Image 1 (cartoon, helix red, strand yellow):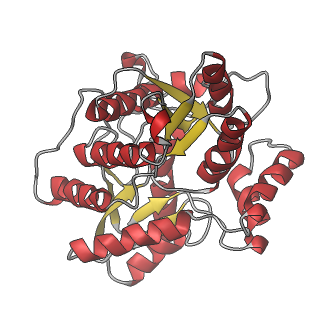
Image 2: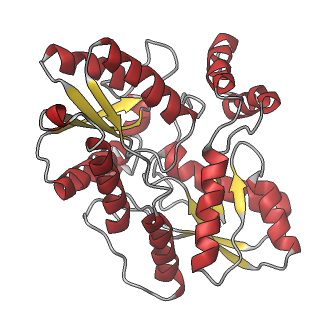
Length: 340
């Protein structure tokens, strides 16, 4: 089962989707109004479900296994998918969550989704084994590196040698990042893993000087989030004389509204306003190597294949039936993540 965030597929679905995402989080209605307009600008359709279906199609070509699709926040909901699996006689299944990193929303919450779905189905629910994080898998790194190379080549020739490589990932509250991981690790698993992915991709590109920045923050301004923001950073680079940027969204597996709005719309507009060259790398999900990587993760569980990793940072391994890797790992703080 591919387990993802979910997204609307028509204008009438946008508001119910956003209310589902933000339920119980105290997000003001005016904030939902603004995000709703982002979706409606693109026809009320998030590209995320379509991209996930493409990954599923690629997996079906590679695996001699049925592949199911479930979402946390919109149809097909994970509870409905697990119920269908039970009706189909599935007794044990692997779960691939579309997040490469640790933290509450990117890791532990997916494990909670698995637990919730199994409880909803009851005694007939299949055993569900979640595949490990993949932030440092060689194929994930290679796909992101080649996407950055391709983006670099779209810049005017006279700017390519001066372009600054900027990696982005979804910002989260500083307190949430501090809670990511276990107390023994000192927390910050999310930001450390993002920075490690950036280091590995830059190394593949032969780049030694680059930036890691953040995007998509929301919530009250008095709550600190990971910074700098991508738009603010572009302004700072311009002030330092940088003439072009290549933006690599390593924090995201596939395009969705936040990538399209925050990078292709707002960040690109800021660069254009400042007269800077701007190139945005593709996300890794559409690359054939991404599906190949998932097959390797499956083989780790089914055939005891040796994990391929490029770092020694903590990485959550396969977990059964949503059980977290440790009771004190990646605990929830206030859920202030902006709707995707």
